Image 1 (tube, one colour):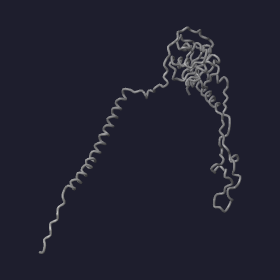
Image 2 (cartoon, helix red, strand yellow):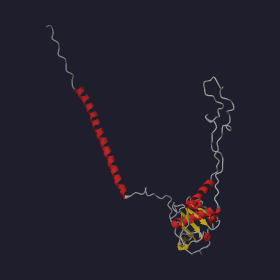
Image 3 (cartoon, one colour):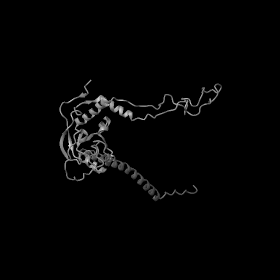
Length: 296
């Protein structure tokens, strides 16, 4: 079995940006958390427990004793010729009770605190190793503004990717700014779980959440970036190779049309010949019978 726990001794750094999307110098990540550890079984256990704990467990069915009716024997035991029955709510009857059906229960799975911490650490290291972890200097929003956060994601080319934004503590203005973006999820750094990190394609972390706040940088107001709501897939984009099949398809269609026209043409000629033959028959005078000779 291969070793799923990989460690790297070298320091890990990440790209840093301002709140408007201006690039800054790369930042070294804390060595205690970002030490290269990626433990797949622990992450699987944490995600499985997280999804199981979301279940309510309300599925319920009724047994034959809980279904209304069926107190009277449907017919007498003997003499009818039919199989004996004691209740119309037996499981073999339509509308009867269910045998071994689901009952309300709990799906709760408890994961030890240290295991949850290791899974969370492994998820952060996995994103850092992929280069999908960015540092933002500060989210200083005076008021909720969805377009402001959307412009940040557009400048980072993340407008059409699943983004997890982790703030330094609870920041309602940032949360409200990203609430209407379907692919963005804003939450405090302390509340993040392994599932949230693995759900996202890219993680944006505010610098203050990692313990070292970056000094804000003065910058000019950027021009707005046009955000395209729909991104064409590779299969949707036309290519030079697609022209040949299209031309072949057109040729086939024209050939089919010519064949159909050729089939219809003899039928039209035959139909034209029939009226001509009838007209000729009308014009031709009928031959008179020879007169009979008298008295021979």
